[in-house]
Length: 439
Figure (cartoon, rainbow, N blue to C red):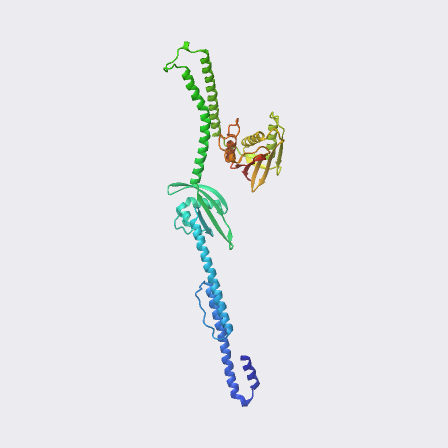
């Protein structure tokens, strides 16, 4: 219409006969331009309200009915759909947040999330309870309420795992802590998770004591029972029916032989019991390791030479494979040799004489740790015994004392390392000594 009006006005412009027509068309043109500006301003204002509502998450905003035209109705409908879509997203986001908050609150371990090293964005009731920091909303407040925990967490850095022991409200707690710092939207979020493991440690200690007491009781009863029985037998042969001591003339040679046999047996069992107690004493008196750099390949080759010199009619092949060849571990060489010799000895005893025995000693790096592996193709260890082999005095061999692997585990613990085993019956066994990698 604006275009038609302009064309018509141009056509009659300058004709004095149509002067009033020109005035009317000019006024109409002004009105049309004003209406066009009003429509454009109306659209701009509605769009501005839409963007402002999105910016401030105000999804209660409504829009006025369009003044004219189908396109304005379509625009209004599109804007309402955009508002509804953002509203749905916000509702879904809020539902997910509430679910996450409920899930975090139900966790049986503490969790704290820090943004910018100070603002606490997530903290669950278990964390407040374990640390005694109710209502803490920033890390500075944690420093005030539990300075020991906060200081030690700051000292661990952005990614770490650790065990901590400290006192909260007069109660000692052993806390397992893990820290991770993911980057979310270009901001570091420090995630601290921790758990009171006192009950788990106590349970494991009770189980360990039960196992140890069961084995100790078994070994001691094996020695004490025959001693008690033989003592009672000797007392019987030296008394008459009325319980009075027999005269020397009443004791014959057979009785003396029985008494002598009993005394020898008692002496033998007593020596065995003393040896058992001495073995226990050795188990509890392992010296502190003197740490130095140990060339793994050189040490393993020396151990193989030592084991090959021992008199043994079994044909066993030994292999040493260390990668890289100059791999070094920080350890006490004497204690570490004792552990490996014990493992190699066990491997030799596990290999049947009817097969070609192979014992492989390996050294390598894996997952930022240094590993020494002792592998054999022996008879293996039954699955039910795998959980018992590191228990003191537990042995599958009649002549074994049952402290070799327990000693090895303690020595590895003193080095800050671990010893693990994998075995399949009739296929072989592998022991793994794992050390922290120290550059």
